[in-house]
Image (cartoon, rainbow, N blue to C red; front, side, top):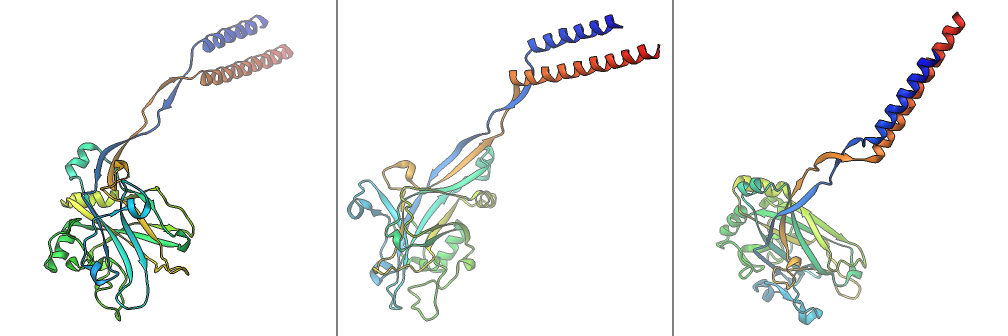
Length: 316
């Protein structure tokens, strides 16, 4: 019996030695890969102002930040709401972006599974007068055209749009029955098939300079592409009437499509995520663990054999 046990122990030792010499194969996975498959700068952007009769009939394609903000090469659009008495001079600025949408076929061929509206904030002046919330909505191109045509206007461009263009003042959700119709909208957002994209809330004294903001609009882009839409208008306005003790408000200045740094221009970005590839991997650590487990099993079997052997000896 002793010879049998010794032979079994030697056999286990040989197997353990062989097992330790052969690396154990374990499954490992690379990280998921995300690649940009669609990157389109907005085709048009502008802002409209409703603070006085002159500006309500003026086009604001972009603001050159070189003069007022000592930033050569920087072009921006603005968002602001600074109220006052009901005199027809409320200082409200609303930004608009026209975004091209890829076709359903293009989305399928590129494999894009996520779309983001992305822009870069230039600065947010007078942040000490915050908090302020900036809301972003979108309207399908066909809805925009239908609405403007009802006012005898063609589709908007960055060089023709103004506060009074085709009653563009509808863009704000605020309106008051006792206010001049020129100031605020005669229709709410919900009545013009607008949908929320996202919002930014900036706290008091919070610095938003050169921050990149992205809103996931995947569902909107895919739904509109499915319907054959080719573009959407995204518009943004400030929710709160902000006016500090110093008489100033606050605003959000966003890099426009004309700004010098190309990467800072507002755009629609589509990405495709590839699932991680699972493949065999030479993992010594896994081999060591397996070896230890096998040794433990072998020793357990040896121990059991010894117990059985002793029991048989006693029975004799």
